[in-house]
Amino acid sequence: MAKKVPHRLYLTEDQMPKQWYNLRADMKIKPDPLLNPATFKPVNIEELYPVFCKALAAQEMDNTTRYIDIPEEIQDFYKMYRPSPLIRAYNLEKALKTPAKIYYKYEGNNTSGSHKLNSAIAQAYYAKEQGLTGLTTETGAGQWGTALAEACAFYNLDLTVYMVKVSYEQKPFRKTVMETFDAKVIPSPSNTTKVGKAILENDPNTGGSLGCAISEAIEKAVSTPGYRYVLGSVLNQVVLHQSIIGLESKIAMELLDEYPDVVIGCAGGGSNLGGLIAPFMQDKLTGKATPRIVAVEPASCPSFTRGKYAYDFCDTGRVTPLAKMYTLGASFMPSANHAGGLRYHGMSPILSRLYHDGFMEAVAVEQTKVFEAAVLFAKQETILPAPESAHAIRAAIDEAILCRETGEAKTILFGLTGTGYFDMTAYNSYLTNTMKDYVPTDEDLQKGFDQLPRVDING
Image (cartoon, rainbow, N blue to C red; front, side):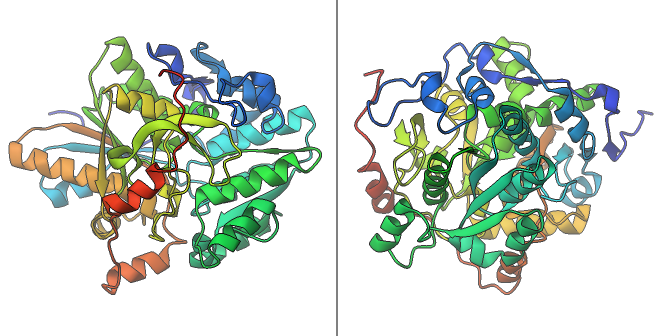
């Protein structure tokens, strides 16, 4: 009789990865370079210094170094909440009557309730190392802002967080948690910046977007001595730091003599998805294995499934470098749905390149179906998932049901990146049948596409 796999597997501290994995090193076709917003020419590293601290700028531009050492100080910080568990969803499997084996990597074991602290502590560390005094950032659902507040408090750095206004109003206690760690939290768009004032003048009732909040955070950073801007997703450096998720997952699965047939992650800007899939994508790129890799996004903000692969600004104010990515347009204002962390108009350039070249798939799901999956998962596995993570749960359940119908006993791995304890308004909306699905029309999306910058260095 085969030995039963434990419900939860934790690596030992000695088994934890001591290097981040840079997925770009194994990509034959690299992501296209960032472009200077003034000249539309590829940026050089010095042009990033006013925005990012130097070490992070170097990581952002590095396409060739396969493994980058995790500073010992960051390793020690990680040990407070890592390694995170790899969990076998036995009860969910039983409820679905599926022959599939379902595993999930749970990243909710810290105050931010998400994976975001993996990169937040790294970015704060490098800022402190450079002698900076403060950071600015944006946050959608609040996980990133909370994580960065934790990290900045640890290093005694000032922090200003521009929180997307609709999330600020939906999740007031997120603000309280950030303020507990001494962060200053401002609903975006705001009257505290030039770009915020301009956005409000154009639309006084806007609920904001991550693009708006990014513009405000960058304006604040470049106008404040000793400050730099940091971002919680999308950027190459963030995907690098989040590779700790996938590296731990792969080590754990090897200890169980398992390998996933399907790897599933929710997709907003790409940080958790890129981190989870990194070592499995490496196997795919190098021909060692052929896992299916699936990105799951909201039908209300469908960057992969309905976006354009083009150069675009990463912010609504159009002050950031341009990135080649799947985008709905920097001016796209997403519906005020309950998956705040997935309401970004674009997608990681790394993931965009991989998707464009056929190495991964993408699906878009409506939020009522997402919450249906979230409630089922919570009842079976006792963890209340964040709406963002529940997108991955939805796709994993659908995959497991397909296995039941076909009789295939696939191994499924998905990322559970956060808890839903600050999302009770959303759960209440679902449970009282007042939740609505919104799917933008082609005409809605075309408005954003019409404003894409007319530039492509590849012709």
